[in-house]
Figure 1 (cartoon, rainbow, N blue to C red):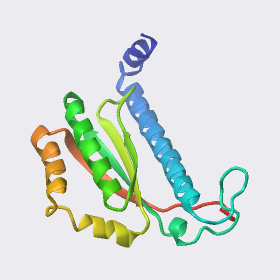
Figure 2 (tube, rainbow, N blue to C red):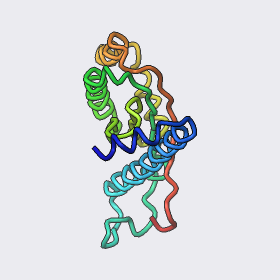
Figure 3 (cartoon, helix red, strand yellow):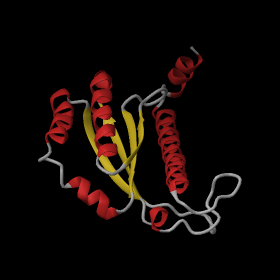
Length: 171
């Protein structure tokens, strides 16, 4: 109930509404950074180098961390089609994992803006990601996953951003 009262108070004026939208966008950006850091940690844990007591590599991890590329997908979704979006998301999580990537999950609205969602997945290299992309439009499972989106209208638009880790020295 408190969140509803705050929402009504902060959306009563255009200036307050703009500030609230800016705050929501900032929270999404911070969340994306945290998820990327965790993705890099997961890749680091797969290396065969010696580790510190916190699980980080003691030396260079080699190409698996240096070359890893993470795709961050920012979605604007139809809030009335959350169930269809979840079905779409589950299909893509499976496909990324089956075709050489590591999916870090989809992040759906919980509070605040109800039309935004995020997805993060990594591949060991840009070349591995490009190999995965060759299956779009040709592999039956990829076509079926896209059909969920197209037929339901659950995704209004999306934007992909590719990121690479920048770790502290010695990690």
